[in-house]
Length: 147
Length: 428
Image 1 (tube, each protein chain N blue to C red):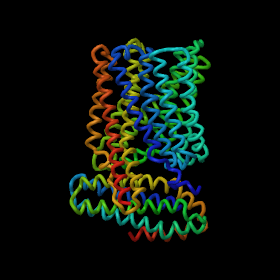
Image 2 (cartoon, rainbow over the protein chains, first blue to last red):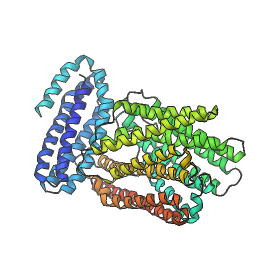
Image 3 (cartoon, rainbow over the protein chains, first blue to last red):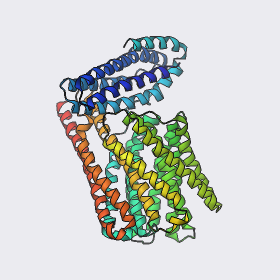
């Protein structure tokens, strides 16, 4: 397995959880939506942390690129963290319309972010970090698994 | 590599926006032409009025949006960065806009030299685009069906433009060229080898992304655009070697690839996991169905039973261009424009600062309202191909209104964006 495979698969897992939450909100079931969205948020935030604490530092150490792609990805993680928070707030207030507006924005943000990671950054990681792939896979895998 | 994922070279909002805001104006001009000249516009595929209306839509609407969107998405979908996106966007946009106006003027009010001028301007606009954006894409190794599709599409754009310039020069200079064959070839490259290849390539990315559908099957996502490009190439050989049976064969392959794509997209969208159907989804569903019907009629048009039915060529054009491409493109604009507005605001505000979500920049109700006008205009225009005397003018009016409403919607989103940007500026 490559880093690209593992992390791409985890993106799809987050998508599934997202769809579940949105579906519930679309039917006006606030409590179900909140529970499902919390599951999504937990998995997504664990994914961000695994990248920021394990993958990105390894990539930066190996390539010397600290202000490159990983910096942009960190910034987009921040933007998504704040959208996730806004979405939770909207649901807690029972406002499914606002939630659906925010979740739409979050979805596109997340998908274009994933696309850049899956098509550009992860392949670069697999290429530059070939020596340590197996240890990285184990560490990232267990971090994702705990979520 | 360093700049690959950075915002440094990502274009300012004005770069794609100028194309997106110009496009509805050209479609409105096509509506005005139909409103003013009525049935004459729908009399034959070959009348100068019809050519003017067609190019107002294909160059003025379709190509404007396609080039604007490509300047924006190439870095994201292909990791291909343009060197000076803002400068290229403004140069290509101005030249394309002017060239389209001159070409349409030349069809309506022929005067010596006008077609040459139009060919020069349009050729230049597309050449500059190909030399910059095309070069950026060809510099990227082909690692996905999307990147391969983009390369094929750019080759298709080059062929379409080359044939268009040739036809304009031939018409303007009175060269003897078997115009029928070459016009068909130009349309084949334009609608098939360029537009359909680009549409498929972007659909592989945006359909799963906007609607959370399963991905297109990998094998199909490779063969559909490749067979389109190959059949357009075979068709070219057939015209050069004067082998009508070969162009007929190429046409069947093209139609089947198009039908496969439309069918596959409809099936995938039925498996979507989004909570609610939105305006974009409805646009795509209608566009898939309209293009499928148009493709079937196109292939049936060779058979004796329907061959002499005079409305057929225009009907096929309306189904594929307005119902198909018009729907696909408007549906995409409704995702791209609000998202870009939000993204630029977010980048200005910095993380943690709240900015309005997409639906606050452009509401679903506004999009749905415009969509009803569009569908009505499409139905009227389809019927007007059969009963032009009665319906051409109402269809022109409806077409004008639908695209005026599109322009209003896009301007609403821009105004909401500007208002928010101004308040961010004050807060800072």
